[in-house]
Length: 392
Image 1 (spheres, rainbow, N blue to C red):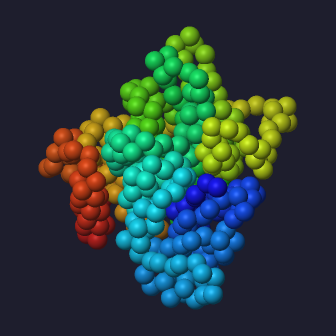
Image 2 (tube, one colour; image 1 turned 90 degrees about the vertical axis):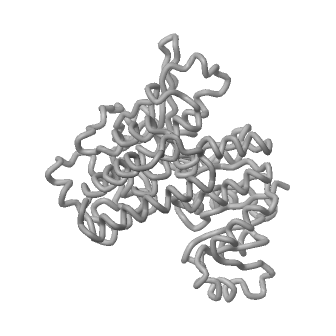
Image 3 (tube, rainbow, N blue to C red; image 1 turned 135 degrees about the vertical axis):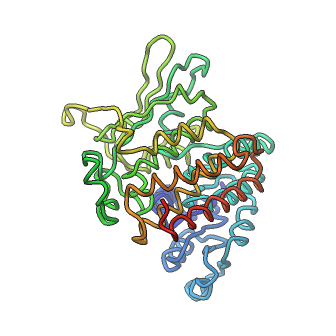
């Protein structure tokens, strides 16, 4: 019986993972080692009870009494806080879903790899902030990282049986988010509610807003470079409003391999869960005749400068990815809180990245866990300083 842990179980990726685990036999088919969640301890307890997990962890210490109460009499252990997440990740497991949002997901995923686990990676920030470190840790312990972002899962699948030396380009697609057709002058007045509504995907608020700003795609460009170890010039982005073609791989003979599927994260999660086999999944089958046509266009870098910033981050190297992601998370927090405008997010990230690049050796910094966390803290502090003083 495979041992499974799910970090970020109550988020959108975690809920889809839970759905698939239940459909494939639940506690009768899997030994659930640990589940983690945030403040929604009622849902975390429901999942833990349904899957008969050994351990449930909430990220927040203040939520521990409620979690213990919800699990009373079940025999399921309850814990809370960042250190509890680390300890949960250190429990031996065969397959671990890394779906904690943001840089907070790096350390648990890193510790899971040390157990030799297969890490199903939905936490793109791990590769953005510490890609070389994460891949080296996997190699050191004979572990495997399987991509769960729909785009990177699509690329991974298109490369099965192929020689990377024959790859000329990798094209990842973007829906364009809620504002794909908005003019620049209107974007300046975009609200949190408007940015939180995705036209195609059902996702959490933070990733939905990141999609609207194209910061999500910017992170995925960096993730593509790190995971597939390709030159940044080989990576392209296309806006594809239908969200049916998730990625394409171009080869040296001119062929393009495209991965198509309904906008349902259970496809990528299910592929990682069942890899190397394929198993029937409860996702919609595409009727191409009914769809009729697919459209693509180049992204507008003036309206969505996040993609340009991603190129700059890759050119700098070192721990620039950690600075970029930390500033992005701080900017997103400020936008949600109403402290800055929609377009201010990219301006803030660019300002922080420029300042840290000019006064620190970001590009020369070794990508160690300590350096990544230090860069993360410094970038957040600098971003908060700019937000509090209004100098963006």
